[in-house]
Length: 252
Image (tube, rainbow, N blue to C red; front, top):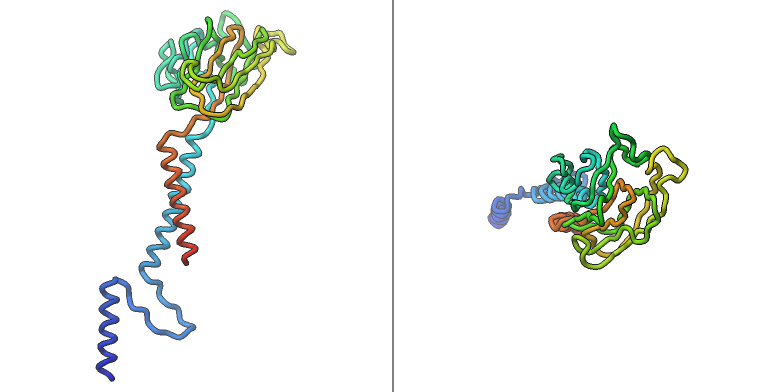
């Protein structure tokens, strides 16, 4: 009988050694059992997954945050060009790279020693105006949901601003703005002294905005960029991590 018990203990110890898990001692119901190594490792993995999921969710949220183009820092009477696209404006100035570019007729305007052209703009340094014909804001990455902006116009203009599914005004029209003659509503100190905020919601993905009113000033154009493909991958990883944690908790 004793030799049988010795063989049983020897086999149990061998299994414990090969599995890297210390044998659990038999104790009374009031004693505390040591936590197996594999369980401690699982808890650490769950904690790391929670942290990773939180970081990934924050990253995706940041990439989808609205972008506001306020024209501050652009040179007056110069084309805005690639100032917000990793390049420069017509005077060689650089700005934050939002992946947004403007065609040549979109110029910046700032008050100078020759006089004040506008006042009461949401951001007072510079505004945009269209010098000739029409101009486009292009966003290769795309934007979605809605577009909002401030404008001051000396004339009423129907469909003065259009949102397009393609670059440079190509593709389908996803939404349009009608502008009122509001430039001097309640003021007269400058030609463009009153600004109204307007917005248009649309379905699909926009890639350009066309401006055709040359008798207006524009400021604080806000769009919501479409997250890059890597952003979607990060979001999927974050959801997978959260799902893993939920399954582990349910199993325990």
